[in-house]
Length: 142
Image (cartoon, rainbow, N blue to C red; front, side, top):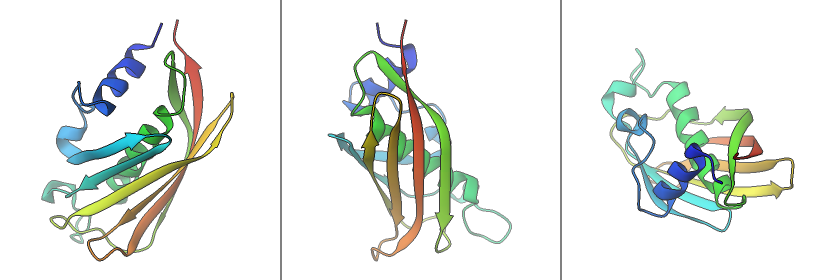
């Protein structure tokens, strides 16, 4: 039996359900997900900006978390969900509210005990803005 969280994320990934509730604030859009990959677009709203006018790093990390988590969910068993163990994020350029960004994630390690997915965030010119390595633990529903 699938976990409620696992069922909800699978419904979002296959287009039959809504995104996570926090996405109302984040504003990410799912482009595609399957076979250990996920692509998302993101136009950060002004409300995510810090005092310097760039998007606060925690929101960038949240976007990369969501993108890499979605990629991971495409490779685990139907009864499994994923729990984050570690998320490492590196920032290369400021993210500004308004312009469009693209996130791409790919599962790079899959075993019974872990899933590792790498994610990158690029600006409209294709330049690297941030990247993340996400270590996830598969958990089976009961």
